[in-house]
Length: 171
Image (tube, rainbow, N blue to C red; front, side, top):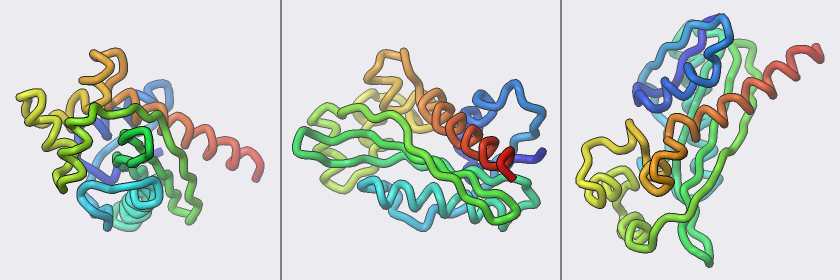
């Protein structure tokens, strides 16, 4: 089975590889647009970005399955949360969607995002590290490495494959 991730971001590709390490699958990544803002705000926009990436990936490749993973933020009365969504699209047109963990951002980080900057840019400035979004991510920084961006997305991918496998066995 050939699976293609709708991104060239190493954290997203590695998340799929990690989630499916015991499966007999080939995993690649391609660059496809999310067709949402560079910094998705809210669950709906973040979810739509994941769906758009999954569908575009299946269309642009000869994959059996396209995976779209999108990270965003949700602003609440209690503070701003990191959110993440994933979508799995099949060549047959089925789409499965799932969301993952959330953590609150420190207020100084949230203010940077509210001012119009992408979370990845704010995190790079905050940590003085290059390309945090392709490595540990904000979740890795704020959990002191206990949970990384790869693990955060890997969890969503496992949910998606569980949904896909459940649906496949019903047919």
